[in-house]
Length: 212
Image (tube, rainbow, N blue to C red; front, side, top):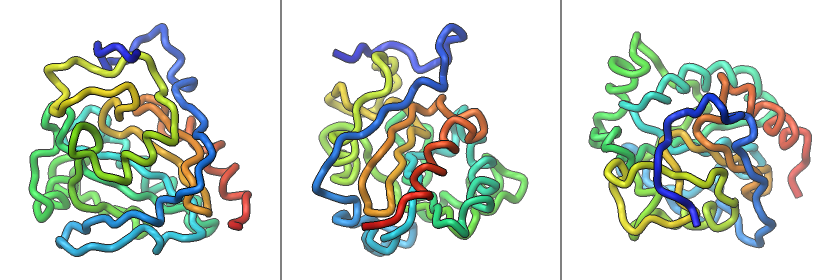
């Protein structure tokens, strides 16, 4: 059973170990429809053959500065087929209160701010629920496919959803690596980052693989 306690970093925990390999599945993320910031619907098959770093994001989070690592990472690996797909979510201490049409202004002028603009391969979609009764089917699938990375999730008063499940996304900026066949391969806790250094070896592993 996953305890519901605190998401704050523990100096005694090696954050680089907070990842898990996903289980084999016959389904792919290409089967799911998603909403754009403009309210149109599309599906993830447009990224077929790409390696996808999939992340739930929020503007007013301590981890929001990870956005500033995304652009250099994509600049380094875009030619090899890396894309980043982001889903804003307001379920963690209400840290993404904006409406879809307001989200980009928040990122550009507030956090990260200073005129920040996403890389052309950083695709930010409409807000969704990643946990609870109304979790998006995409997240239901990837959570079922990839084991939990920690045994403690967060403080119940900071989790804006019900019910709490052992497979839940722990906080903003949790990440999943998807291979060129649309299969979830690795799951990373939000703190398993270190400016991207924790995730980079796994990205390079999947970039070296060919699509079936």
